[in-house]
Every structure is written in structure tokens, then in C-alpha cells.
Image (cartoon, rainbow, N blue to C red):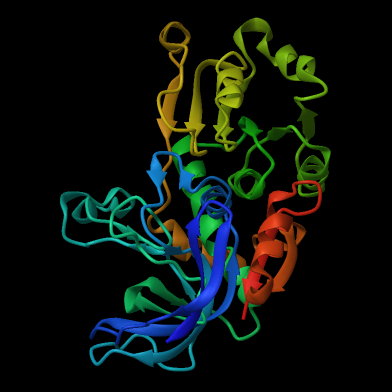
Length: 346
């Protein structure tokens, strides 16, 4: 038995005792060190759903997790009890055509921590103890804070988005959204050699952080939409735009500010149903519109970048609260005037 933060319905999050089965031969038991509250966790908490995925049974939340291995299955050799690890929440089947082609983020049988995409749901990592397959665990240095290691997951999402964006060296880049993913995309785009990065949002507090970490310009599209519209001149300005808000209005604003032959990358999870896209504009300007879903090998790259200090997530680390104050932590994480990334720990 172990304590876990389990969502039963919108606004019904309970820290309660759940059972933990014995680990399989290739699994380990991990004691949670820190778990980051993601936008999808907030959506399950606030709405009981994420995009097209709705809660149909109680589910332990959390997929941005790191901790310490406490037990290992009989076939495990790569990690041992006492190892500090970042845990990749992706559990692909490793056997389908997408896994075999090196695109396991598109696995036909994916089991992703804290997700209602399938039923029964996949339980998450906001638990004193949780199970993971050994190959999901990436050892981390002793000096690496657990909440920094837990940022490996959102950083991997950002790195995958940057990969889908193509060559960024010397490019002009627009990032819509200064939440955790947008800000991590900003860090990753700088690392990839982007020449100039502009970041948009509806709130001033996250835009201030965007400026701190290297945005050449920030635009509050709630109070000054005309500043973004100015980039529509001469058939657009940006080589690449990344949508990291999940808001249809934000996506709609990007196609006219991207130059002919440019690219729009969709990272944000949109509301349920169809979202309009200006197909004639895409056609006439030959704009590439691509999706970026989760990540694959970028997870280990993310942990390596964090461990080396080449990516510094300190500016987005807002608070760490005990699991007993989970509701308070979720309220703080949802308040964009006060927080970017909030972590839970036991």
C-alpha cells in the first residue's frame, strides 16, 4: 500500500491509500522525490479531461517525476536500489511498427503515466511509491535536485518540438505561449542557434521570465495585439512559429506572421473537436504545418542537458509543496501570475 494523489472527477483530488502490486521481472519500484504539475494534470483537475481524453475511473496523476529506486525485479540489471533516477513516463510496447521504426512516441500500445487516453487508465507517478519499467529510468547525478530532474519530461517535449521545427540556426522564431513548454522551447531554440526569438502570451508575469531567459521581444497579445499583427507585413516575418498554448486563437494568429515556405509546429493540446486551419493560406504560401507529440530519445538528451547545466531551468521553478497540500499546489500552478512550474513531494 502507498499514498497517492488520485483524481476522481473535476476538482475532486484525493490523497489516499492505494495498493501497489509486486514489480514484474523488468520493473522497479521508485520512491517519489519530486513531481511536476503539468498543464494536462491541471486540465484533469479542473475539467476532468484533457483534449479528447476524459476520466472514466479514478486515476493517479503525474508524469513529470524523479525519485529513488527502492526495489528491482529479478531481471533488472541497469539500475539498483538506491539509484537516483529521472523516470521517462512513456512506456511504449517496443514491438509495434512505430516502435521498431524509432518513433515510439507514436506507439500503437503506449502506456503513458497519468493518462486517460486508454481504459483502464494508466496510473501516474504522484505516489509515495510507483512502478516503472527499468528502461524508463535514467540515473542522475547525486547533486542534481529531484525537481530539476523532474523537468526532464517537459524539456523533452520542447526538444521534440524543436526537432520537428527543423534547422533553427540563424532563424527567426516565434513562440506562442510562455508557459512551461513555451519557455523550455525558448531555451531549446536558443541552444539550437535561433537568431531571434519572439514570445507571446496573455499575461505579463511569464513574459518577464521569457525576457530573462533570452527572448529578444515579448508581446502581450491581450493588451497589444497590434504588435503581433505588425509581423504580418510583406507576407510574414518568422521562419518558424511554435504553438504552445493549446488555444485555437493563438494558432490562428500564427499563419499570417510566418513567411512563405516557413513552418508552424503544433505542441499545445487543443480543446475537443475540430479546430479551423486556413488551408488556402497554407497552400498559397507553402507553409508546413506539423504536429509534435510527446518525445522519444529526447528524454535522455533532456536529462543530459539538465545534468550538464547547458539548460538551466531555475527561472521556471516556482515552488515545491508537500503532497498533503496537493489542492493548494494545483491552485498555485494554475495561477499564471504567481507560478510557472510547481512540484509536489512527500
